[in-house]
Length: 269
Image 1 (cartoon, one colour):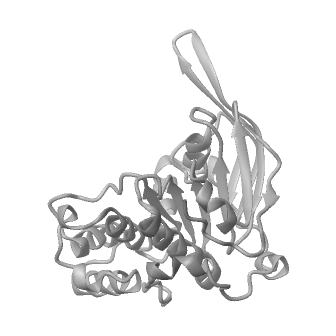
Image 2 (cartoon, one colour):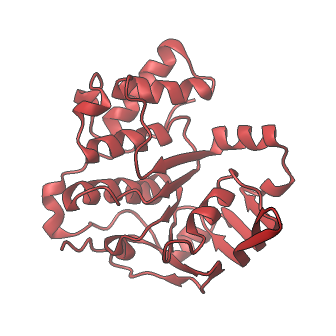
């Protein structure tokens, strides 16, 4: 299994020019292949003894291949809970979630684990890299879990690092990398095994403007050039103009999504 070859290297010094148009991102083109994610009547209730907390209420959502969907809202609004349900980490109390036509709510724990390994890559705010492993080894480990090992895993990991512009950092430990470089390694790791979905939880929250621009450009190219479906939880207002659709969560209720601007521009403060 090899990754789709896309040149993700970014020159962040071009930030003043904004993000350039990438491919054909028209609504008709994105939606020609059908829905990538379908969420219907999802409810999530957490219980603690006799008390319960209604985290999500009647969530309905459609996301298409090649789209960047943002989930925004205040802390405690249910954003990360919804992302975890979309990624098959949590099962909703009620409702259905389908990815690529597969209803995740009907899968067993082992089936969910296999689905995640094959189809989903996760990116986290704090990177979650193994501190004792090099950048290359962090990606190799992810490939090992997906059944790719030995020479093939090392070759694939090298290719992925090259795609995110970090081929020269392959032997560096995380402590020797900047925040932006760590997040790019995390993106390369998320791409291990060529997943269709990338789910990111606050991917730019710990980054400065230049590093954040590089990371968001990478994710945008993933969606538009490699036709991945990207879902991001964020508080970062700089990302808004990069998205295709934005969902606003408050008190577990998802506001009606809307299309973002057709000319994305990264605004620096």
